Image (cartoon, rainbow, N blue to C red; front, top):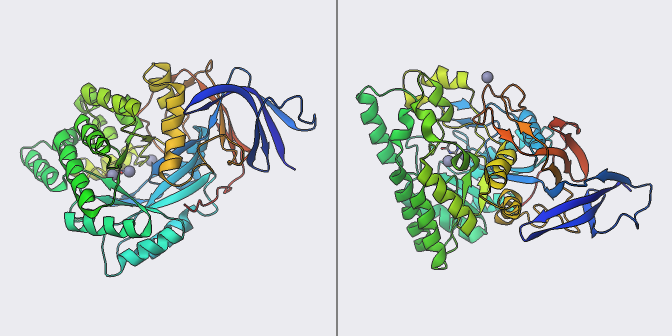
Length: 457
Ligand code: DUC
Ligand code: ZN
Ligand code: ZN
Ligand code: ZN
């Protein structure tokens, strides 16, 4: 039998922390408790004294090897998942795009082919629904049966990805009847397109204009509208990448009336200043993310949303486009810059630093929003997201006395920049276990290639 004993660490869950050992057998957590004396000497020990022992991170929002905005994201399932693993993430749920001229089944197959035998960590998929066709809802039901039990729609990007309100209603009905979940990108795309066109006509063509073209109200209005449509369809939904105070308030108000809306925000909205948009030259393009970074008042509201539970998940929205690629596509027109940035590698570290080390959330909340809630929201709990007997042994050992410096020079993501350049993190992720296999040691990947398994959810 393949066994390991993690000895003497402090195990953290959403509800507390306790000093205990963890026995891993055949890739699963076999027992938690004071196990050292009773465990045969032959079992390998991992000394976790003074360390946190936590569930591996679960990032439910990545775009790996994905065609978007006329180009393709820079990480494939090898580089993207090695980056995830070394940063303490042991599971991703990745967005597969509906491909041009292809139905949802064909598109999901194509995404499977990209991941199979390449991903080094366990992975699930959501499918984006961008082009409705006759029997799309039966295909959604079939995918749900096959373990792809969540979908995404865009209320922005008319002409490519956007669906209209009637289609949102239809898709909600579809996911409702098949028991799946709908993720919603909430922005008023038509208003954004008009503001952007006006700005461009005034000669404001540079990358910083991206922020002005997507004001907070463009998110808040779409969130409010989507909640109302979801009530009419009698099917709840999950908002991705919320960035504004008003959006959090809309979600909290719905939750208070008993309507189970759920929502995530992302690492960058909680940790980065919008000041990058004021920088000269093309530098602001690095933060051409959608939605854009917001002011401090929005950031403060997002932290309140995390701590009240209105926001239950922090994802990375890892959607990597190289700086050189952004320049190639959007040098003369900010609207052509592909929207997105890297983040899967640094989500856990940055959330530890800006949340736990800076005192904005407890270590228990850290585990809740980076692992436990993502698993619960997307039907992977308690296989994933907790350290309990029977769960997959997806575990990170974190040294709160360690330090980590984030830099593009050393990152594993296939990227020429990171938004978190120069961040000094007051912890180190010393070991990462995936189904009991040691796969990363102090930021270096040490696992086998292609070992990840598709998670049917
Ligand atoms: N939405 C995402 O979720 N990722 C990148 C771009 C976008 O609009
Ligand atoms: Zn989106
Ligand atoms: Zn995204
Ligand atoms: Zn590059």
